[in-house]
Amino acid sequence: MGITGLLPFVKNSCRPANIKDFSGATVAVDAYSWLHKGAFSCAEKLVKGEKTDGYVYYCMKQLNLLLEAGLKPIMVFDGCNLSSKEGTEKKRRENREKTRQRGKELLCEGKIKEARECFQRCVDVTPKMARDVIEACRKKCIDCIVAPYEADAQLAYLDKVGIVQLIITEDSDLILFGCNKVSHLHLSNH
Image (cartoon, rainbow, N blue to C red; front, side):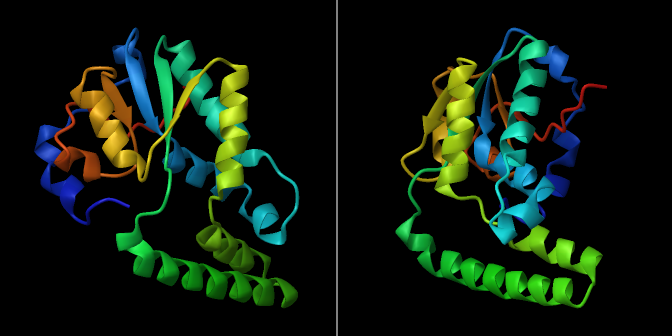
């Protein structure tokens, strides 16, 4: 999720970069940040329980861009939920369910655009979805790590011991972990 207001606070310490600037580097990717973006693209199908691999396609497309730029990616997935976040997770589940129901109501009313917006807000990344991406990564010989709990600590460890030279994530938390190079890259093939 990140820390509200942290990125604007550290803005003067940030610089724009092109992924090709890191050619030859090993990069750790916060896999769930890409899984969430990928799920966003096929949210309606996921919420309706329809078969889709849109989230796998999204992650693999991003990984291919890294590979084409000469980087060695390591996908880092969240593991078990932290018991200290149980209350937060319960609220999130309840909110997702309310939003899902609202989306279905809007769909029945013929309000397609509004329904899709609800579906995108309520989509949940499941362990099965993570497994699907891990299987696709294995086929391309891309390393994957499932962290004991949240990926942040594992990503920070990989940075601290020098295994990776860059971390790609949507969260700002890793800055507080003392990571050297954290990127909020938005990859594209342009």
